[in-house]
Length: 185
Image 1 (cartoon, rainbow, N blue to C red):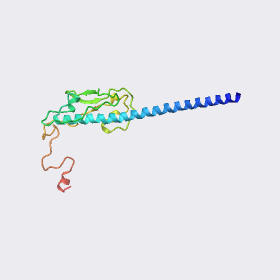
Image 2: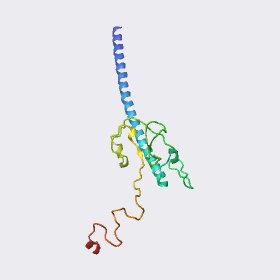
Image 3: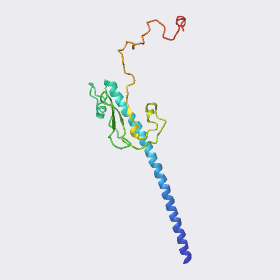
C-alpha cells in the first residue's frame, strides 16, 4: 500500500509539472498571437490611411479645395457626374471604430486623418517615403495621413517667377557654353 501511495505522489508531481509547462507555453503563444494581430492591424492602418490620403488628393484635384467632412469623399456632387473617392468610410483598425481624428487645413476642410489609438507602434522604421515621418513614433496617433499639394502655382502660367527670366527663344540653356551650342552639342 505504501508503494502505491509513493507512486501516486510522483504522478501528481508529473501532472503538476505538465500543467505548469503548458501554462507557460500558452502564455508565450498568446504573446506571439497578440504581437501578430497588432502587426496586422498596423499594416491595415497603413493601407486605410493611404486610401484616405489618396481620396483626399482626388477630391482636392477635382476642385482645389479640401473636403469639409469625410462623408464628402463618399459622394462628391460638385460636378454633373457624381464622383466617389471612397466606397465606404473605413474602420480605424487600431480602435475598431469610424471615429477618425481629423487634420484640418488652415484654409478650411480636412487634409488628413489619424488614429486615436495611444498604443506604441511595433513598426519603427522602413516606412514608404511618404510616411517617413512615422519612424520612431510614440503612438499610432502620430501616424497622420495628410495630403499636401506639392506644387502650388505662385505665378500665372507662362510668366516666369521674379528673378528667373526665361531665356530668349533660340538661346542656349543656362550652363551650356555658346560654343557648345553652336557646334550642336
